[in-house]
Image 1 (cartoon, rainbow, N blue to C red):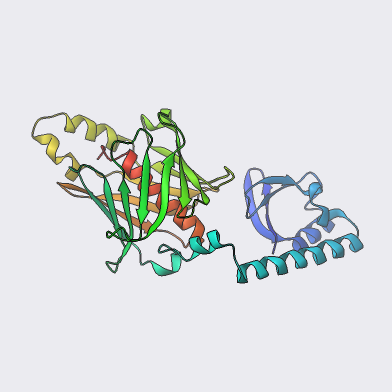
Image 2: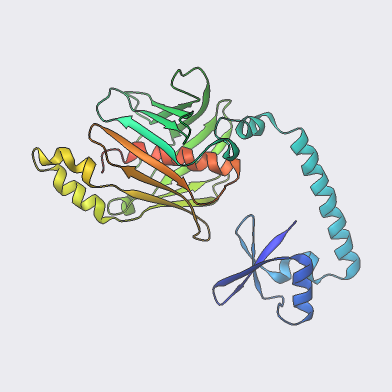
Length: 292
């Protein structure tokens, strides 16, 4: 069902169905210049540009009939999905199969950076391996530490890029989206965005308290005391959607000789979005591993 938010004085109201919006047009609440926000795409559109709202009853019925046909086609496709999407949905990281909070950890001193991710039951839900001596960042994500099943890869678009994109791909090479690092902002406060394959921004990752970075950097320069920076300062990163609603949080836990994080879910996400968020968080950890 198509749903829209009504934007009034910068505030979003709703969402409303097309039938509800037609009633609001009749009552004079909505006109052709009213701004609506598509619930799925998050894009703004003038109400007058939506054919189903202002055409006569015959055209409206035709539009709704066409919408029913499209919905039936989508249901049929869901019954026989594309292999790449089916692999994504049935990967080892769907929302329904993981118990939050997730635990993430990696060793501080290691030739390669390997990240282990377990759910609250202790089950492995991902193992990240970063290839050493690569001019372009290349990360592989396996189902577990045995590295017997490759699920995803993450690779930088460019060799050297301070504000680069790191693209997510399925095991068969399908493009799942990317995480983008905003370099100038990251000098003070970590800021990343997660995009889908078309480049549409879905989520933002931002550091909860940038002062943590300042104190950690100062203490890490002090001999001997610098060893305790990882135990005293704990960066936290909030994941929010396009409307600023919290979705997940990555928070560092006290540790001496390794880095440990917990991932908390504030609400359930669509399986494909959850995969993008977790891949983005793991890439961000690798980029920010020298901090906190």
